[in-house]
Length: 390
Ligand SMILES: *Cc1c(COP(=O)(O)O)cnc(C)c1O
Image 1 (tube, rainbow, N blue to C red):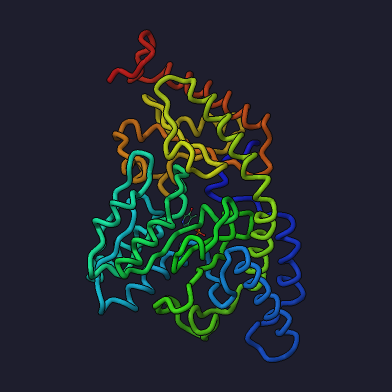
Image 2 (cartoon, rainbow, N blue to C red):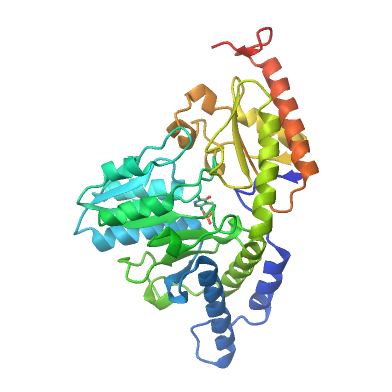
């Protein structure tokens, strides 16, 4: 099997598993308890926090553990909206955000906020000019993801955050696809809030974090026992936090070598696949995640491609995992201006750091063959002319 769906989730690293196991089996004390046995768990939690902070160039007291990327995104948006709702009610989100952001935006709209979507260009980039024009005196929050989960485009976050701040707005970025895959420095980016999730970088599922720059107005989303300095209640997931931190440190240490290697393999795949006619790469050609290649193929369905790839032992994805059961084409592909019928033929391949050149070539060959075969059967492909009937 070739697993090429690392943007959906990743394999837990053996190092992360080893680091977290003692906190599931032996050192199981509740970090809030007062005996020294619990103190060991508390110390491990705080060490994990420090590791995450170091990897992000943040301070430990700015890192809050959550149940994952979805919660971090919900908290960032709702927390700021509720904290600043009296000052303004205008919120800007990019049109290609993950549903964890977009659906939270829809919920806020129902609560009386004015939520506006920032359009992207045909490569999936939010132009700084676009944000500049959309900002208003009552804009309280701007949320633009660091790297897109479907097309891999990396946004000019530094510029966007600076523009948001000039306009007096708080800036959040969903960095779930970026952390562990490209260098992420919260100081250099200049963001106020940043979401990350363990299982997208070989950590465990069900644990994530929100970076909250000191002084950022943010009300809690989850109320209860007052853990995480009263900002995120619930008995801490010590093993999860330890596993997340161990995985992040591993990725961070390997980034300098893995990034360029993965990018070269990605480019090799793209070059081979684009020998097919009526095939395009989606997203930015160079400002994109190193391990992610996404395509559209005219005159065939992405779902059919996935089934055929699966039959050949290749795990891939079409659009986002969340929308793979719906018939609507992905909002991301529509936002970059692809017509409906073209957007239906999308495939995303996202490689892990362990992928080999041989595997990438096998994926390129299989994908090429599958597209050929499906087009031969497609009612909207003119085989004689070698082009779609439209
Ligand atoms: C996976 C993902 C999320 C959700 O993270 P979970 O930890 O699965 O809840 C949010 N945003 C992006 C961009 C993602 O890729």
